[in-house]
Image (cartoon, rainbow, N blue to C red; front, side, top):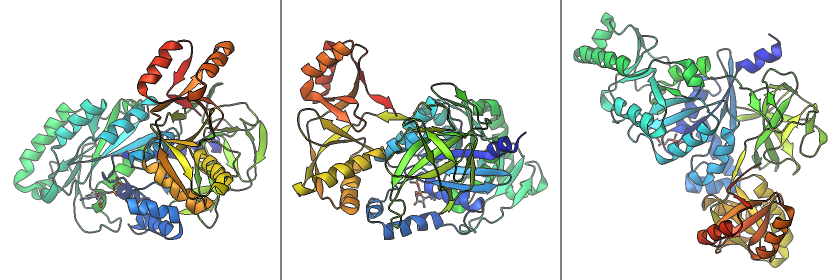
Amino acid sequence: MSSLSSEADKRRTFAIISHPDAGKTTLTEKLLLFGGAIQLAGTVKGRKASRHATSDWMALEQQRGISITSSVMQFPYKDRIVNLLDTPGHEDFSEDTYRTLTAVDSALMVIDCAKGVEQRTVKLMEVCRLRDTPIMTFINKLDREGREPVDLLDEIESVLGIECSPVTWPIGMGRSLKGVYHLLQDRIYLYTQAGRQKASQIEVIDGLDSAAATQVLGSEADAFREEIELVRGACPELNIADYLAAKQSPVFFGSAISNFGVRELLDEFVEHAPPPRNRESEQRVVETHEDKLTGFVFKIQANMDPGHRDRIAFMRICSGEFQKGMKVLHVRSGKEIKIPDAITFMAADRQHTEHAYAGDIIGIHNHGTINIGDSFSQGEDIKFAGIPSFAPEIFRRAVLKDPLRLKALQKGLAQLCEEGATQLFKPMRNNDLILGAVGPLQFDVVAHRLADEYKVTCLFETISVATARWVECDDDKMLAEFQRKAHDNLALDHGDNLVYIAPTRVNLSLTEERWPDIRFRATREY
Ligand code: GDP
């Protein structure tokens, strides 16, 4: 095997998904701790805090107690390179999460053992299903009283529609938590409350039937052995092929905050999670092991470091090797561009990278020429498909305090909309600037950033727009006719695509009925 292939095969690129508060941030931090990327727990939060201190709009994030930005963290573990893509938990930022999920090869789902499957988890699972993304499950907060493990697995199976195969099983819960039993290894991992900060070694007992196990389990030994018999009988065995086909989820129990069950999860993860998968483009399937570089941009983020004031395009490499200073084709513009300097994201730091391989995410400095969804190659006309853009659900009109700042407002809105979280619409009939978003918090973020980064004070006023649809028609004459008749409800989006802005849902249905040959699309691919 060439060294290029073996580098790609080492990569494990994944995202953690969960309902807010299930423990995604805590688990991320603990994975970094066990991965040796950080020395002490608390660093992920600490990193967030220092960013707040220096960046004003991040203060908003802190005020709201939510994590707006998502980032990439790379660390080596055993003989693998793990790329962990963080996603915002709050549903107003779900658009970002959906795009990030197009850039991973697998996902890790965190569930709170007291709450079970929550509403955001359901939605995220639907998104994973679009690409048959393999999913491992971590049932968290075992140190607290939770629901019966069997109930939790039943709920995942029935609500999320995926078969569960437990890899570990809890021995007690909450105050009576003794540890977890590893069904594949026939080992007990004992729980201690010590060592929340450090990745300390956990005491292990070999064999559920051993004398040591009997001693630890005490009067519950026989009952627990029976329980495991039942579990083995009732639950499907771990089947890696089914996991990789996204039909079965291996399930782990633990307590992220107590560092418990995390190493067992990480060990199985690097062993079984898929390496970078071949990826469909509009032209052909691109194989991971091809020599030439291909990749696509799934995220653009501004002002990650206020000292730099830059915008970074996040590119997922699909094949080949990135080398510092190389020239690549920016497929949409047809131009060759040189990438003198790309960034990889090693845990909490940015580092300049010399090489990166399929599965890796690199950050490219962007001065407005790169858009979300853009593909890169070494000369070939390749366009990766499948980065969704959703019609926004809430619309507001930008109202400027100082009319002389109109240019700055237009520039600011256009640049912020390039990041994908909000969309800009320019109506045909007037000069309004209408902003659409999936969640109301987005307007606060945009207003805050306009003030901070563009020195523009602006309000967002509610308007009577219920929904928007991208308009397409194969018949140019009919489209022209539609544009004339529906002029007052038409707008152009950021990419100058035609959009129908419906004042009410009823208006949209009537218009759809009246124009059966016109397609009104609720999603669009970048
Ligand atoms: P996120 O919103 O999913 O990122 O969740 P966080 O990681 O911020 O955790 C939410 C809350 O749950 C925080 O107060 C954590 O300290 C707490 N938490 C996380 N993991 C555990 C755990 O294993 N046990 C307990 N008892 N609390 C936890």
